[in-house]
Amino acid sequence: MSHIEKSVYVDKALSFAQGLAFRYRHEFITPEHILSALFNQDPFVEAVEECFCHIPVMEEEVDEYLAQKMEQVPEDTNYELQFSVQSNLLFQNAYAFVESSNAEVLDIPHVVQAMLLLPESWACYFLKKHLKERIPDFISQLVVIYGDDLSLDENDSDEPHGISKNFITCLNEQLENHNPLIGREMELERTIEVLCRKDKNNPLHIGEPGVGKTALAYGLAARIEAGEVPERLKGSRIYELDLGSMLAGTQYRGDFEQRLKSVMKSLSAEKKAILYIDEIHNLIGAGQIGDGSMDASNMLKPYLEQGDIRFIGSTTYEEYNRYFSRSKGMVRRFQQIDIQEPSIDEAIRIIEGLKEKYEEYHHVTYEPGVIEYAVKASARYISDRFLPDKAID
Image (cartoon, rainbow, N blue to C red):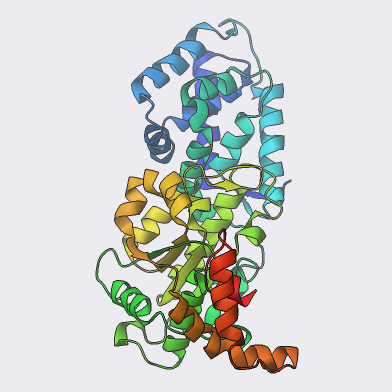
C-alpha cells in the first residue's frame, strides 16, 4: 500500500490523533482518536452539519469517551505509542477503498467509509447512532467537500474524452447514427431560450416514455453543429451521461459519487459543455439505481450554481412527482419544459420525415397510407404506450 499517498487532511488527522493519545496517555492510537481529530477539520464538520447533526453535542460525547472510557498508562510507566488492531483494520479497509476506485490518494472519505465498517469500534457505533439513515448522504457530502484529491482513474486528463470516455457520449459526434428531429420546433426553441438565460438556465424535459425527449437533445446538437443557434451556444458540445457505465464496478458506497464528480470536473474545464441526463430522477433522492438508492443531487448543486456546465434533464411525469419534485433545490435550478405526446397528425408528419431512413435500412418501400394507418391503429389499439414510438414499432 506504500505506493498510495495520503492526503494532507489524512496526515493532519493522524498527527492530531497521535497528539491526543499522548495527552491522554493512551497506549494505542484508536479510531476514536482519529474521529476526534476529524472534528477539528472544517470540511468534516460541514458534512456532519449538512446531515442536521448537533456538532457541540457530538464533540462533547467523543471527548468524554476519550477521557473516561479508555485506559490510561500510569505516569511512572514508559510505553511506546502504536496503532490499535481496530486502527490497523481501519486503514486496511481504507486502502481497499482507494484501490477499488483506482484512486491515487487516500483521503478522509475513504477513512470514514472504512470506519463505518469496523465491527467492534465505538467510533463506528457513534457515527451510525448520530447519522442513522443519512449515512449515504454524509458520504456523498464528504466526497464533494474533500473531493479534489479523489482521483478516479490513473489515466485521467483534463479532456472529457480522456477522463470520462466510458461515462459520457458526445451527441454532436453521434448525429449520423441517430434519426433527425422532426417537428418539436416550439419545444426546441424553448430549450434554447432557457439555455441562453443568465440564471436558471437548465431545461428539464418532462413527458411520457416514447414521446421524443431524447430526440430533442439530438435535435439541439444538430442545430449547434449547423450553427443555427444564438452566439452563446455556438461551439457547445452536448454530452450524454451513461449511468450504466458509471455504476459498473461501484462496489463501495461513494464510488458512484466519485465518478460523477470526475465527470463534472472534466466538463467544467471545457466551458461550453452541456450535460444531458436522461432519467435524471435516478440521481436524486430515492431514485433507484442498481440495488440501492443513491442521492447525487448534492453533488450537482455546486455545478448548477457555478454555471460552467449547463444541464438538460429528462424524466417522466410519474418519476418527477415521485422523486424530483421532492428536491426543492433541484426544482429551483431547472426550468420545466413539458413534452406532450404528439397529435395523430404530428405523429404522421414525424414518421413521414423518418420514412426514407427506415426504407433504406430495411430495404423496403412503404406504400402510401401505411404510415397513416400505423399511427391511427397504434393510437386506437395500444393504450399503454405513446406516439410516435408505438407507431414506429
